[in-house]
Image 1 (tube, rainbow, N blue to C red):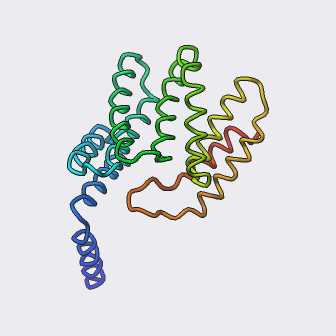
Image 2: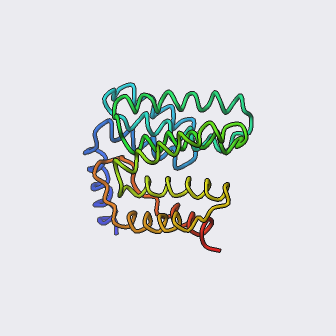
Image 3: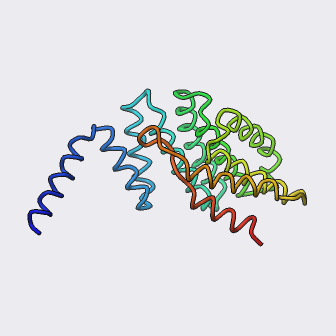
Amino acid sequence: MKKIIFILLVILSGNMMAQSPYEKEMSKAMQLWSQQKNTEAVQLFERIASAEKDNWLPSYYAATVLIVEGFSIKDEVKLTTHLKRAQDLLDTANYISKSNPEIIITQAMLNTVYVAFDGQKYGMKYAGENAQLYAAALKIAPNNPRVVLGKAQWDIGAAAFFGQSTEPFCKEIKRAIELFKKEKQKEKFAPFGGVERAQQALKEQCVK
């Protein structure tokens, strides 16, 4: 038993040593985010971004953490400041990696935070922009499951608001689920996965 533990420790140590400083820091930031230590995660992603000036991922993830967190903010002044910081990070990511579908749909998600906060105030402002963003992302990456899912959910919300059928968009959620199952991660730390979110969306927005 001691030999097995020793071998496992050696393998784990070897894997850690094989990681570059960037990989170690990104792994740590991801772990902080998974533990809901959002402030620490964002700060670490920002530090990585300052060192990896040609890499869009650290700024993208720092923005994403802030955007997701924005859905729970109830004070408009605080929300505006919070999302301004996220927007600056997303702009940095977009400058490094232009026409990136993952960044495009994350911009749409940032806009959605405003809409979710006050639909009457922000709904008309961002409705057209989000439709354009999702259409652009889908044109670039028609089989990216996160793009397909994001667009479908946005379209379902719009259809429900105008009293239209959501059935065509529910089919797209089903397509996203199948795409998630086939997806393979091409680059370490690149956005990947989301089938559970798609299945939950199907259950909540489509299955009656």
